[in-house]
Image (cartoon, rainbow, N blue to C red; front, side, top):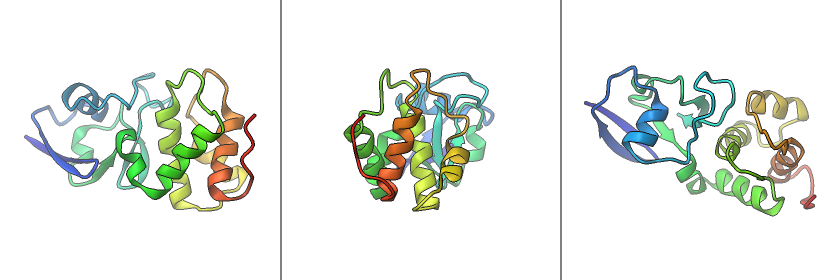
Length: 156
């Protein structure tokens, strides 16, 4: 039995230690906001926070999350920065199909918590590997800058 701290609550799970965190979240705990994309940590759809850092849940074993705080998209609005990121996403109409957006929001929130006024290079580095098939990268960058206070909100 493994105990995981998910969104501020302890969860006992009976899964092998090498089970990807993604499957524990989605299949065992019913937290389906974290998406399965590639299964190889290449697309970012499964991004969650592990002790405040962005990680790919599809390749992170549950054993790596033991004793750490896991935050998923379902609870990101409980964080002041996360709530601002979500609001910027809505204000600017960032999502189209929306599939990648939980991972995008998680990565953007982690970036802004680490660096309140990120440069374009910081944004590129933090968001690299978070793929968006709809190509909303310009809106994503604008939303991050809006939260950072380095640009005004103008809906494209």
